[in-house]
Amino acid sequence: MARIVKPKGSVWNPRTVTAPIAAVVMAGLLYTYAITSIRAAKRNAKLHREADGGQLDMRKESLRRHGLLDPVQGTSGYELFRDARADAKQETKFLNENKAKPLGSDQKEEVGMPRTENESVLENYRGSAALQKLKEGQPRE
Image (tube, rainbow, N blue to C red; front, side):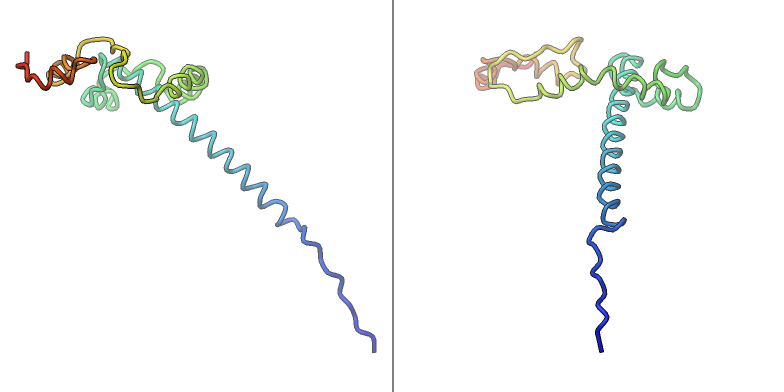
């Protein structure tokens, strides 16, 4: 009697083809959503900081959420995602500059007054002669 030989199936079937494609598409969507959400959150925090006078104020934020203060313009969900891409080029330029600088090099000065008393004391110790000032133990101003 002759044996019936089954033909061997191909390795390629719909499951082996579509699973990697679906994984790549989902990873791309997740990456895009994450990047856009981070940019929108940074923009939202920036707008709220500007509205609060330079620093986030949780009390004002709470009053805004409960409708007692006017909401900050440009912080609705649609506006944040619409404008997130426009700021992307500027933002990535600043993200690439976060490299360590050698001691004694000039630092970018922050705009405005120091936020706390400690920061004003620390401002006196900036620069190349900071270590010498600290060793001499000059009295705090």
